[in-house]
Structures are given as C-alpha cells and as structure tokens.
Length: 284
Image (cartoon, rainbow, N blue to C red):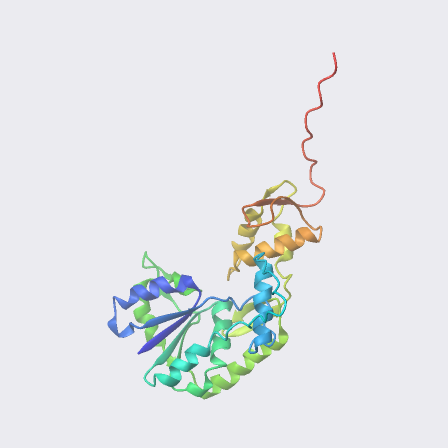
C-alpha cells in the first residue's frame, strides 16, 4: 500500500483526482499542514520545541489560550510523526511517497520528515518536482512550484519520478534539518534544488512598507501586492502578523480592528489628517 504525504491542504485535490485515472497510483493521503518555511524551529524534535512553535502560531493568529488552573499540567503537543512511525512498524508492506513541489514549504517539510524516518530506509520514496516541465490546461509548457498547479492527468507523468530516498540522503538531509533547527531563522527561502536560506522574521517588512501608501487602504491590498511579486508566496497569516507588528512599532498607522487583513486599514505615518467633524452651528 502507498501512503502519499503532502504538505498543505491545497496539494490534496488534484492528487486525489489522479487516483481515478491510474489505479496503481491510488493510496491513502496524509497531509501535514504546519508551514515550516516560517517561524521558530529550535529543538522542534522535543516537546519543548513543539510547545514553543505552538505558542508562536497562537500569537501570530491572535489565539488567546487561558492560563492553566492552579495545579493543572498542560500536556505538550503530540509528536505529529509518532503515529506514522508506529504504522510503518506495524504495516510492513506500507511504503511512503513524499510529494514535494519546488517551494520552501514542501522542501522544509521533506527535511523535517526524512530526518525522522531513516530506520525505514527502502520504504521511503521522494517525488521532487524540481524545475520540471508540465502541461497546463491549454497544453502549454510551464514549470510548477506547487502540487496544486499540476493537472490530475500530469500526475501520471510525475509518478515516474518516484525514487527511494538513499542512505546518503537520509544522512545529509537529516543534517540539513538539524542545521535549520539550530539556525532558527524567522523565514526560510528556497534558492534552488533543495538549498534553503534563512532570513530574519522581518524579511518581508521592507516590501510591506513599500506597498503601503500615504492614504488609508485595506491591509489586504498591501499584502496582495507583496505576494504578487513572490516566486514562492508566503501565507496571509504571516504577512498579517508582520503588518500588525509594524503598526505596534509605529512604522505604520492603522484604523479598524487589527484582526484579519480585511478588518483594518493601514497607511504610512504622517499621512493626511482625518476629516474633522463639521463645526457646530453658530449661535443665532
């Protein structure tokens, strides 16, 4: 049996549709949704590291978790790969196909996963769509960066790329994951192949500031302008967090409730003064 692994819900639909075209491709799909291209990774292979990342995501998404009651012990987040490893031990015929598009989210997810599966070598396969041509709906050639861009019929070609992860890759790519954890950058960028470069959490701030004018406009307008110029778009949640941080630092002004990108407007500091309420009528 094949267990297909993808990183993010958007990768599921077309892969699932491809099963109907090729029964040999059919299998179960397991999706890991945490985007490891952003946020802290330090000691993520430990309960403390997973708790720190959970807390960061809660802060990014403005999720308030009530403090534990006196004497209550909050359990650490569960290891998301624990059940997968248990299945591999119990189901000896199970093989894994890891699907990765040429984008930092998928590549970081691959590094994270393969660093934990070395004991199952021979059963772990990778399909990495690295700078490979595919056909779009108009039969034009293009180079997808994400699995969601590939038509179901094109997965029949992609499956031929499946290959076992080698012993050398388990070692080298596992070392790369440990480097990423120790570096603990704010964002991770793909430079080509499987080469990841770390940058500070503020990396996109300059672009967000440049995309914001002197008149109030929806925060979503600035984030969309920045995403539109990216080869590998970053998630809205992350840019929303950065915009709100820029407001807190006084580098942007805002009006409205600082929730989703559509809930508030932003502008550069020192923009035109707000229109004042009409003066009271003069006394007769």
